[in-house]
Length: 226
Image 1 (tube, rainbow, N blue to C red):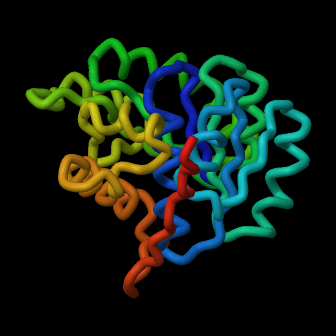
Image 2: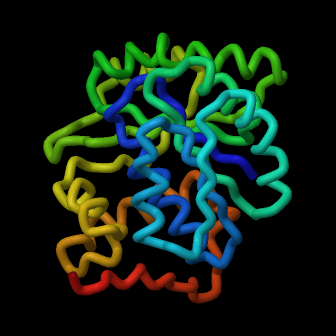
C-alpha cells in the first residue's frame, strides 16, 4: 500500500506524520519504505536516526516517483511518501501512484477553506484514476481549547473528503522529537499524551495495519560520544 502525505501547503505536519507513521507501521511488524519526496529531505534524515532499520528512498523528481513507487510497493508492505509543500508536479506524480492520501490541515476555518485549492491536484488524480486515491483530512496542530465548529464540518464535507475523528494537538513534544532523532512514544512521560493520540489516529485511518500481537519496538540509533 502506498500512503502519501499530501497538501500543497507547507508547515501542516506532513513530515512529522510521515516519520511517526513509518515507525509505527514497522513496529506493528510490517516491512516499510519511506519515500522522501521533499527537496529538504527532512523526513529521511529524521527517520535515519529514529528507526535506522527502515529503508529510506529519496525521490524528488516526478518521473522517478512515477517509475519507482510501484516497484517499492512490491518490495514492502507499506510505502509512506512525504510530499513537498509546493511542487505541484511532484505532488501530482505521488497522487497518481497513491492508494491513500492523508491530508494534514491546521484547525482553522481559513485553513479548511484553503483546502479547496490545496486539494486541486488530488481531485485531478481522482478523476484520472476513477476515485483513487482514497483521501482523509487530518486536523493537526490543534489548540487545547479548539472546538470543531459546524462551519468547519460543512467546509470539509463540501470537499467530499472524510475528516478523521482523531486530531493531533499542538504540543511542544512534536517539535522536540526530530531534534532528538526519535518519535514521541520514546520520550517518556512527557510524550505519553502525544503517543496516545497519534496511535489512535493511525489505528483509525489504518485499522488493518494494527497487529493484535505485541508490536515490535524498534530501537533508535545510538549516538556516539563526540
